[in-house]
Image (tube, rainbow, N blue to C red; front, side):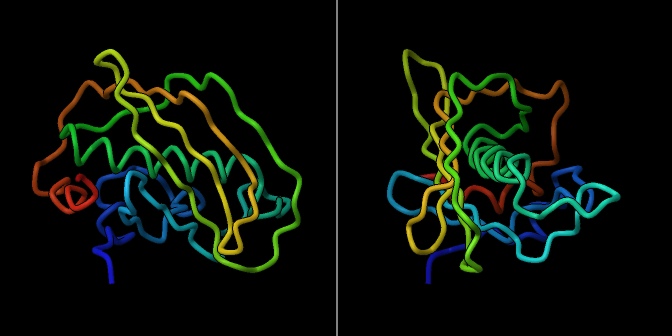
Length: 152
């Protein structure tokens, strides 16, 4: 019943092709933003590499953080740095997978802490102190307006 930013709104703004359109949607939950991994993503390599490779889970965190930042700041950003990434070995069990992204303001600077979990609470990945850099161009305000529902 929570307001959701839908994939069609996200990918009107994001420039990603079909293989990297990882978000099925995003919602606000308390102090975190939840980004749901789109099921049935196409393989990212010609030899059919598995869907849930580490790059896709990291990208899920990047895009979830990015739509929150766009809604809050009014601009798009790209990844700049990650202080620490921790991977956990678990077999994918067919249940929905989510990025839980927490925006953190520290001394006037924004960074994100994130983790990827499934609907059963199994942890796949953690990112600490993820930072971005703004793109040098503006996006039409009306395209970013749907993202503002994620801001408290």
